[in-house]
Length: 244
Length: 368
Ligand SMILES: Nc1ncnc2c1ncn2[C@@H]1O[C@H](COP(=O)(O)OP(=O)(O)O)[C@@H](O)[C@H]1O
Ligand SMILES: [Mg+2]
Image (cartoon, rainbow over all chains, first blue to last red; front, side, top):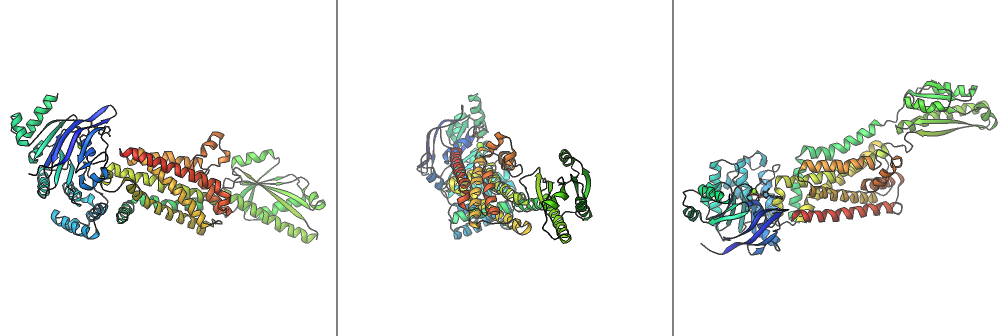
């Protein structure tokens, strides 16, 4: 694997008033890898991600994403990334096609590109029947797959996914991860947060965040070996106990 | 530019697919104008009046009979002193009191001139107006007959006095008032709700992560409402003009300029509200309590500013709506040009600039 670092984080910290949500975290992400950003609810995953995508200013520390400093070059960072937010983030009162057209448009795709992408996407997701239906009519799993595809419309170098599989059934989760694999295979770097420990097994490397700090970072295989357990869930439980 | 068009298109989808928005946009202005307009009628029929005849002579009796015989008036009671006038109005039984002066017939014969005072309850200004006109017509009719009998010139002077609503508020006041309220609703409330909606749904984040710059996002969100507000203002002026004969004496260009100025100030207030609220509910409450209420109470739309307690009169000066109402009334009713309303216009410009600067500042802070 190409070992070029596409994300470079050093002592990144975020405080809200007197509460420190992210405590001086440091890590690198390699180009083309699936990087799992794990942690329980409230661990600080979303807060950290928002700093990396340039919509939240770090209190201190540094982060370079796709070669740009998130503090000073956030507009350049935005051009290189895709993002799927933790809340489902498409317009419920727009049809699937309208949503795709809109997001393609704000990313500066040409009319022809949008047309091609729309057709391609609708075909790949098997949405031909509902393409002109309002998004509100779709089941959550489909919405999330659509969201993911839309985040990739402009072919970003890195895509940030914040709990993309929250609240859906295991089969849909499985399908979603297949989409992630396919995208990673094309060379896109995937930065994904989750609190499902079983999903950690699908990642090339994972970091485990507990109460704002990164407590472990390695490949799932190495982590299991290190903690002498058989599943990522057990790794997580051991870590959580250590912190307490 | 292409991005901008796409953005605006999406914004229109939101608006046109939302029943509540559509109602506020098109139902409200029409309903309000019609409500205020038709609640005020110009027709009178068997209106109860009271008579204070201080002369009690043959001529006053003739006039009184004439009035009583008309289908327009019904003499509900006769009173005997001026001190009773106030109390008959308070009881609400009569809409007007006619006062014949002392020695009416003598004045008419010696001075060739006598006085009738028409005192009307002007809480319903159009009716008050109509009453005065009808009384005048009856008196004129009478003098004509009187002249025929004795061919020298006689004159009965009517003095009009209005109770309760000396400014004679009428549909002419409601049109500017309704216009102000609707523009506030559309520009401030609807924009603040539509921006907070994106925050609430999480789509604002996605927009901010896109290559769009924050100010482009805001311009894109606000533009459709500028457009719709202008259409709304036009509908209201047209309705006022065609249905209620509300004149537009002044320049349409000036009227549009001042309206756009007010729309922009309301929009910046809307943006400001969206920066401090995290849910659509909050945005709506702040808009209603913080903007609509002051507009209704303090702008002079419903309660005349001149009859407010001093502290409220002072506070009313910081309400942009007050200045806007003064301006459009002057333009529509008096045909005022910019040389007459430049002071009010400058105040409105000052306020608009202030709100824009404040909302840009606030918006920046929110993004960090
Ligand atoms: N804007 C904010 N102001 C104050 N506290 C916040 C803010 N955003 C997040 N937090 C707090 O920071 C902590 C981490 O939140 P978050 O990053 O959303 O966690 P995760 O995504 O891992 O579930 C939580 O305790 C949360 O309450
Ligand atoms: Mg989160």
